[in-house]
Image 1: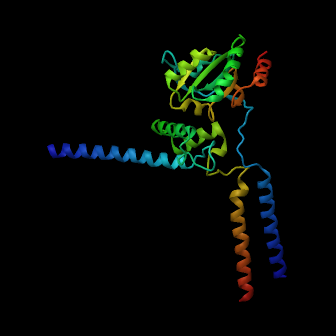
Image 2: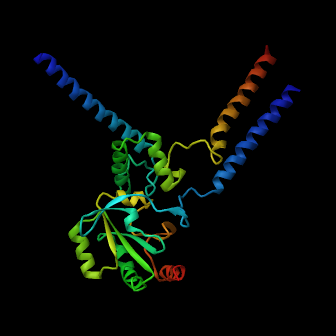
Image 3: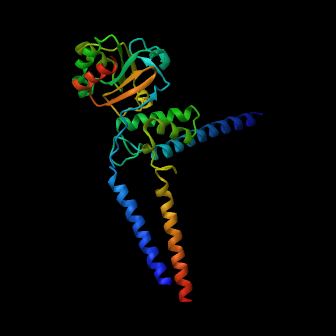
Amino acid sequence: MKILKLFFIIFFIFSLNNLEANTDDMKIKITKNLRCLICQGQSVYDSDSEFANSMKVLVDKKLKEGLSENQIYDFFKEKYGQWILYDPELNKNTYILWLLPILIFLIGGAIVVKNFKIRK
Amino acid sequence: MNNKVLKISTIAIFIIIFIVFYKALQDTNIYTPKKNSNNEIPLFSANLFYSNKQINSSELFKLDQFYLLNIWSSWCVPCRTEHPLLMDLNKNKKIEIIGLNYKDKKNNAENFLNELGNPYQEIIFDKEGINAIEWGAFGVPESFLINDGMIIKKYIGPLNKELVEEIQLLIK
């Protein structure tokens, strides 16, 4: 019985530890995708400015409140606009950015295939 | 025939790329925040500077009243230059000035107010800078003109005489 208790305690501590590690990973992931608006080309994660440090604290707070990654992005987007995100979403301002590489790839592929067939 | 198609598609791709780059390079790459906004004030809870009491945004900002939320700090040099203007603005009874003390030490902030005067009806103590982010602020000083629970104008950087005159006109 004692061993069983000990096992449960160890299991509980490990799962808590794992939970904390997951939150930390998520915090790093989110802050790496948020732009430090007052820095030159740095993410919130990379920057040590007052602004970035406050953002880090707030991301941590929101994660502890149980908000998901996307909910946190939405929160910052509402405050600072789409520019705060490094990974732009597909919308009317960014559709060229997303679709052009695919379009070029398809056209280029078609040209290559056609040329290959001609040579054959 | 096939050669013609190849030439036309290559030229078309280059034209598309040229247009995209031309359009993108026309836009400035420097981030310029929106100054005119019609956003509702954020919902937040914060600690008051003197009483340390926790308060909600709805308790702080009543409807049918003009407010100026001013983000300030004792270590911020431009805050010193705008402070006398806030003292002047405080004489106008149509507006209440709420201070948001940003990442400051309480002693230093108190000394700052003792030296230059206190134009604030209430002061929020934002030790970690979280409340400032909730307001969508970039740093200090920054001010938000509020009416009916809406942010009607945002002033990034220190206020000057012209801007204070503009505020006086807006609240008339």
